[in-house]
Image 1 (cartoon, rainbow, N blue to C red):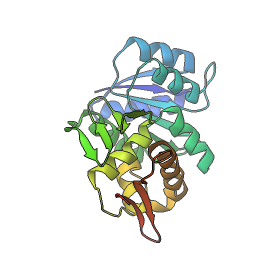
Image 2: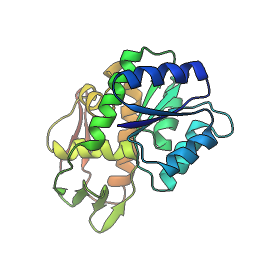
Image 3: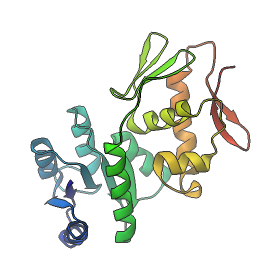
Length: 223
C-alpha cells in the first residue's frame, strides 16, 4: 500500500512517515499543496493524508482539484479546526475522513486502516428501493429517470440507508458506519448530511423516502 502525506510541518510529516513505514506502508511526502497535486496526479496512491493549512495551495483546494480531475483516492484530512462548519467544508471538498491536531499515532493508524480497507472492499450488485436506484460500481444514483449527483459522504450515507431499508438507523450507527466516529462528535454533521440528501433525493417528488423517526434516527421507507 502506497500513501502520500502532504504536510508542511516537516517534523509532523516525518513522524507520520516513520510510523506508517513501520507498519509496512510505502510513504511519500510533500510539503506544500502544489507539490501534493503534482505527486498525486503522477502516481497511484492508495491513500492521501492531507493537512488543511498548506503553503501555495491549501488542502481543501488540493482535494477539490483532485476530485475534479477524476481522482477518487481516499483522503484523510488533518486539521487544527474541529467546528461543524470546518468539518463539513473538508468533507464537502471531497475528503473521506478528518483527524484533528494534535493526534495520537494509534488513532491515525486506525483511520488509515479503515480507509484503505474500505477502498478495496468488493462492491456489490445494483441496489433498488422504490424508484431509487444505486450502482455501487460506478457510484451513480438515480431517482426515477433523474440522475442524482452526490458527494462521497452523501453517497456513503445513502448506501447505508439503501442497504438497510425500512430499518431505523440511529445517529450512533450512522456515525460509526459512515464516518467511524462517535455519536457525540458527529451529531450535527449527520443532521446536515441527511438534509443534503433530502434535497437531492426527495425534492420534486410526491413521495418522500428519507424519514426522521423522532428520538430514534432516520429510515428509508415509502410513505
